[in-house]
Image 1: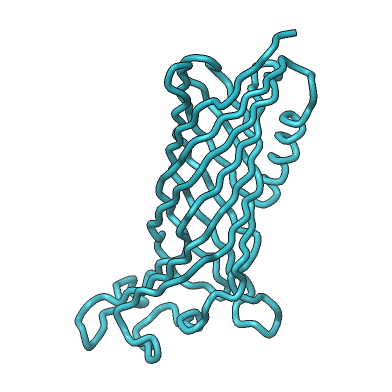
Image 2: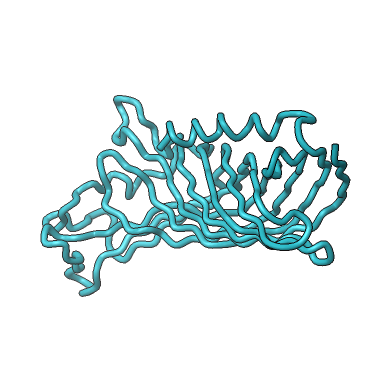
Length: 248
């Protein structure tokens, strides 16, 4: 996955940064975005998980520099308030939920991490530019800083029932996040509808792969890996602040 995304970035960024090769554009747009995220953390040793449902939202920016052949080349950025984290799937060796002896309920554990996230992506679009639908691909780095974390559990974290569990990794229960700074690579596909009178409406599916770890990963640390990942479904609305173009 890292190699694929790196190759995509190397291929996309030169197209967007190439000066005066195609039809000149100088269009800056800004607006808002929001959506849902389905997140997890790649632990080693493994922690069995289900996707954690989270929300995200913030400000969107886009600068369009030129139209290169049929591709409209832009740089997009966002400043988002986002939730990340993981939702443990606590099962027996028979793949049944572990039931707490005291409450009679299936044991649950969730950790939510709240971030300010800043993705910066190369954006390529094909289709209608002024009025109508276009298809786009975008990819680039993302940086985040954790603001807070919270835990939701319905059992005693100090004495978890390990006898019935298929996965006995529980060191994370009493470990606050060590690395508040997060970074990785994101890439998305989507469709956009544009109209000169109302602006741009965008629907996107995006994937984020974290390259950093939330916990220490040295030989003396418990986890060798603890990187985050997310599938995002986002809506955005933007308007052109300035618009100037010329055809050569």
